[in-house]
Length: 230
Ligand SMILES: Nc1ncnc2c1ncn2[C@@H]1O[C@H](COP(=O)(O)OP(=O)(O)OP(=O)(O)O)[C@@H](O)[C@H]1O
Image 1 (cartoon, rainbow, N blue to C red):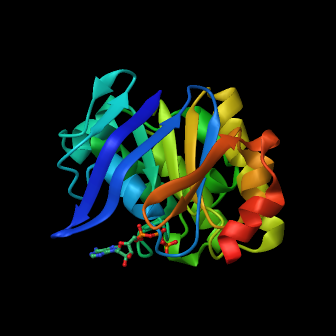
Image 2 (cartoon, rainbow, N blue to C red):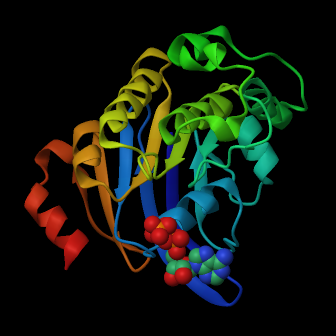
Image 3 (tube, helix red, strand yellow):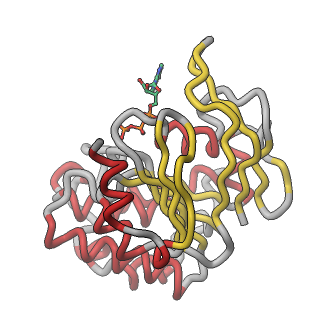
């Protein structure tokens, strides 16, 4: 579904990611894990066209999108839930969801299944986005990314700032998006237990490079944990 090949990513003159190779297979949940500042968010921003990526390829269903505008990447089928969620606090829940339609030129309507997936959203439709809890805002951010009917959903630290009891619900919602809607998922995370519970494939990043990768069920959690703490 999504394949990154030999991609470099820069902020100004500084190369933060050298020659990255990473793949999110169709129908699977893939996680990219690593400590603070290793380049996980930069990887997702590169996929969205939000940082400079002069070299390499980003293949979405075999088409190289590396030089496309962000807007066109969304139209091609990438949904993005940024770190911190970027909910507009003064806008209502409904208005926040409908913002997702802007990427399609303001056309279309919010698919009904989104409300089935997150029943709290129609219930709170008229509340301000800023009045929701962290977990509810995360659901809202996922819903907003789903209105464009993506083929792949990428999420930047979906568990950040969310109570442990609610993290399970977020995990369940992501699993349903993957299984019921058949949407491929790529998640950036630091929370190892969450990642081990949800992913089919796992990549560990250090200083902009992948240092370990494989099927999650075949990985030694202690080894991954050690890489996260050493
Ligand atoms: N806008 C920017 N300008 C310059 N350097 C940046 C910028 N954003 C991030 N960096 C640098 O790029 C590197 C990778 O950052 P990135 O945010 O991708 O890491 P991360 O693994 O996602 O960490 P975190 O979990 O803290 O978000 C860091 O050294 C960071 O300081």
